Length: 363
Image 1: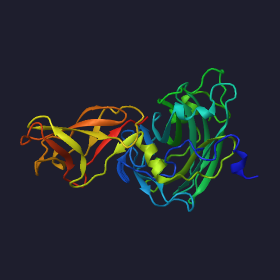
Image 2 (image 1 turned 180 degrees about the horizontal axis):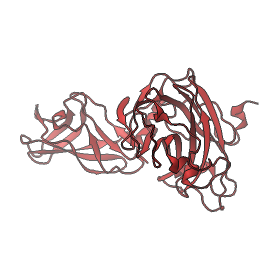
Image 3 (image 1 turned 90 degrees about the vertical axis):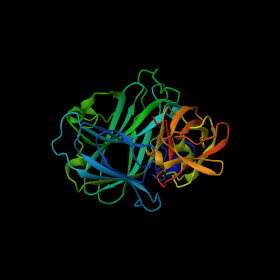
Image 4 (image 1 turned 135 degrees about the vertical axis):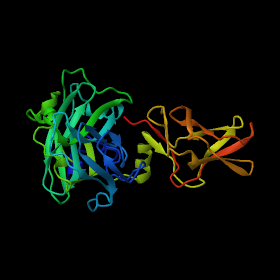
């Protein structure tokens, strides 16, 4: 009997992986970001967030074509660029993945019949380190952590976490909000490492027990960390990493973040000249987002955008601005100093290879 068949009565053959973009194939924001460490952010590969607190360490994060053969061509690479050997109590460096409650109901967490889950992933590093993988229940502040070791070669780790029946009345919320975080602990101070690692069961969190026993990614500027093939599934057995069509993964990612293509003379949408200075247009999202976004991201330079109208084009005098949005699309204003004719049709366009529009509703 194969491992995949052993879990067949627990998890569907297709869609068993609850992780989105575990192969690190989608990176809408950027392929590489330097100087990470001052604030938490989604930087490169979609759905994987760098969470930081109080550390002087800095890193470069890249989507790198160095994945294990047969699993994925891509991986996340973290490269330590500023070391932090003097670790204060509250310091944190975590690579995390966040899940909606309605997408993890199959776990049955917090009630009778709750199931075990298995987290598997491929990892390597510049040397041998001990790090930790934690499942953190956001709804009830419960957690369990397992240690794992790295080598300079790709190794698949398979970590089975116990069922969490709790008091029998604390299931994950069945909605589109954050319920579960998978944390890869790479650096932490005594606030999180000063106790005894909680490995045997899910319990109400005690901070000092969350990451006890880990090494520090920030110990040396020679340190690198690589991760791909991340899978979370119901049951006590890690099945083969689920390969997913790139179009499916892209659509799943765009539920949380949608970025238009960037390019010179790229048309974002048809628009309508509200008056002589403002053209309003509606951008339809390719998939319905998790919730209505509340802000517009763009390249930050007014000269990157223009309004094409009446066989001419007028440069924008301000960066595109946000009007309102639903889960299916958003209105934007392109503002020019003058030159538009009220009532005429027009187009929102880019004028630079870096010009883009983006909407964010990450967890």
